[in-house]
Length: 327
Image 1 (cartoon, rainbow, N blue to C red):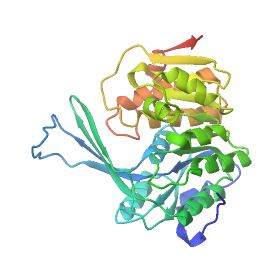
Image 2: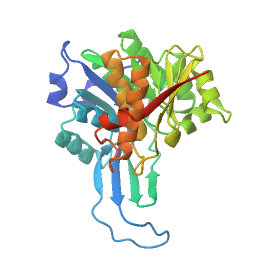
Image 3: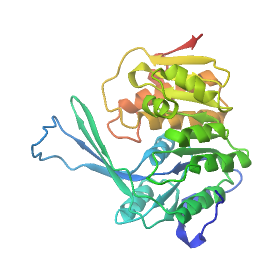
């Protein structure tokens, strides 16, 4: 997919421009399906009943934005690139500006989606809109915006679900852009997009169990992760919810990281925290074991925070992560 764009379709903050110099070490977070995330916290959800609830927390979100939030919280310079449109666009921009998150937003006609998380004492219920299809010109503009911001970027993240009718090669095109600039790239996506991105040379891929098995088939996540990793040159980090996380190399070597006990909390955003950890670890040139431990610790820390895009202090959790080689 050849990236072309109308420069007038792109909006960016002055803070983003300030980070564009060659000395910057920011992490570029491409949010392929951004959203306004709304979270309600109540004692109990009763199906078929009316609930009077406290005012919900609403903020710019979607996986890519949540990754950027976690990184910013941990002191890393970031830049969000995302297609945004429709009636919630002003809310999206206002929240990023209020949060101090630099951004380059591509104006599109399709309305930006909304997601709703209902957090109760017994668990979290998520209602996630799929999003509205974007046109080929919109995606070309997104790729051009990404390409234009590679100067001053040290790591690229492509994270999030994809709206209907997204071109099959979109995530692979992002990987190719990053690789062409000599940058590591982390992808968090599912289906054929995941396989194509890995085959094109993604440095790290972070599917969850469902995304991994959906892309590769079968029922064994370790086998699926090994088959996926063998298609590329990077590492597959597969998150398995309470069962921890796998790290698998193309030659089949694998490790399993797991916390010593299951945490109570809101798991929404745990995968985004893992992606943030991996991107920071790659920025620092960390070892594979450190990448895995950090990803598992930050993922666990996200469970302890009620809002996706934030994590509790992860340091105390690191010592509770056990890494085991898998034969």
